[in-house]
Image (cartoon, rainbow, N blue to C red; front, top):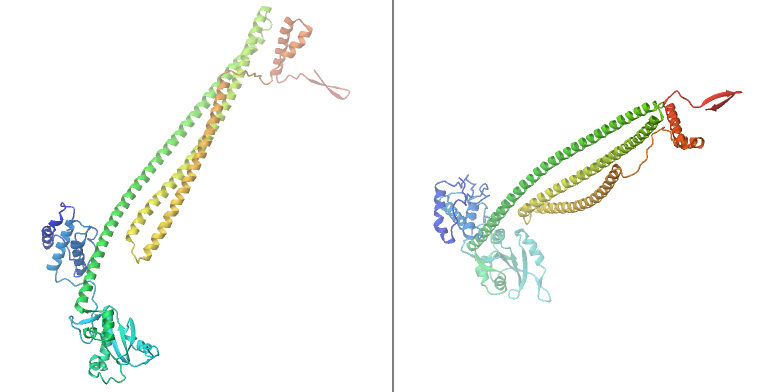
Length: 561
């Protein structure tokens, strides 16, 4: 059963000791599982840590650190972890020991924990024979001694001259670690084996000979008179093994508790960032779905506009065809009527005058119909040209829209990548460690990639603004040209412009009138010119009539009327 820290209301700091009994009883009753195997334990009270395995000592340190020293935890969480620490110490006391082994000490004779040693671990070498130079310093044996002691891995070997014994002595520094303690014990053991230890040095104080003596520095050396005691009191201090072990244990426990708190806070931050990243991903997914829906609606609306434009164009063409057919029908009726009137030339003068007037009226009407037909033809051409212009405008606008849509897709895709990179970058920043070179390198690569994406988005935004400005300018020019064309077409169709129209192949009456006025009075000249013009008009309608004849005379062809 997993524990939910939000089930009950929080408690105050003063109620921690009273409240910890409740989760302790729940742990004893088995409501929260802690031990999963002989070496695997889990904390049931930490969110995000319920699936992380601890060893017994690590989990105990975690529970104690959170229960006593975590300032960013609530009082309820502290009480829960204190109950967990109590449960581990009392009910799971037979669990495996600490997860990190302590370095075993293997000297020839195990030291007593109450013995006082010089710390850092220090060895003493005496009775080093050497010559003293003019400045009062010893020389000749320091390099040899360093080579001899190198097998004990000392950190440093410092030699000095003893004015009292007229010999050199050396202080060997083995450091502060347990490996240095083991090397110092081995150093002392080797000298004792050769009967050149501290005991022999003290017994043969006056007859040392040329042999060197060495031992592990202890409390009596620290308190001794002379240069050796002075050096030890200045550079070291007296400590027991048990105090050093206790100090190391406290430092390790404090460090583990601190690192555990940092790890818990980091994991909570990672969980929060992961949650925000998931929310951002869901929001981006909804935006993508909304974009797809708008794109479909846009395509449907564009198809609808195309369909309406095609229907409108077809309707205009059909109306134009109907009007042209109507004009052709009326023109044919007038021509038929004119033919019938031309055959009535045998009527009397009065009827002839009426006939002439009617013929003139019909001619005027015919001219007007011809003019209307030509105007209709021009209007049809203007309409078709306007439709072609509008079609080109629509295609240009659609191409602009498609280009802008592609740019919008690329921009939105780039924004999605930037948002995702930012989320990943935040997560990776909380996951990086001080020595994790791989994560730091990946963070740098992601930061460079994010900067490139941002520059690419800025460039795309500038290009988009430039294209929008150009599109608006070209659209304004097209609209002005379109309004000008519509205005001109409206003036033509309104009938305010005088346009003369002449049918193809029709004879002009003016030359006939001029010729007859020279030979006849004006009233008769007009009638005769009209009759002759009508006669020639009828002749021209006959395909078999040829006004010119070719006559051969004396082998030459002559053209005559």
